[in-house]
Amino acid sequence: MPELINANPTIYTPSKVSHRIITEKEEQEDFEDTIDSQEVFDLIRSISDPEHPLTLEELNVTQLDHIKVDDTNAYISIEFTPTIPHCSMATLIGLCIRVRLLRSLPERFKVDIMVRKGTHQSEQAVNKQLNDKERVAAALENNHLLEVVNQCLSTAHKRGNVSR
View (spheres, rainbow, N blue to C red):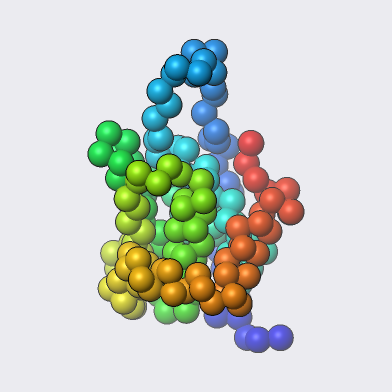
């Protein structure tokens, strides 16, 4: 078995706040539903870490406060915090976040995904990779990498960790 990059991560208690309550008005077909930070957080909080059987929320990699949504201008900004400053999985984690949002949100949204400032030794390089369409597309053409991403996106569901 390969040596773990962060063999002993700090585990945080997931937030009790979860999916917003849907009102009767929101159930109507003509209701214009806007995307907010809570909805985006609910989409990414259950992504599994590539190295540990824990979610990004449990590792405090993702936090509601680090998600900004401007539904009117179709823009989302997400910052995430790797568990250690030299985490080699940072790009993969960001790619998992991007894929989850690509698969879940309307195409009109521009999404920027960044490592929180000062939390990773290669933050500029990671941010450049995560926000370059050609690099993301090339990464997703790699079958092995896509398989790992899909595993990270589905493992939380299999373990029953999806917040409801």
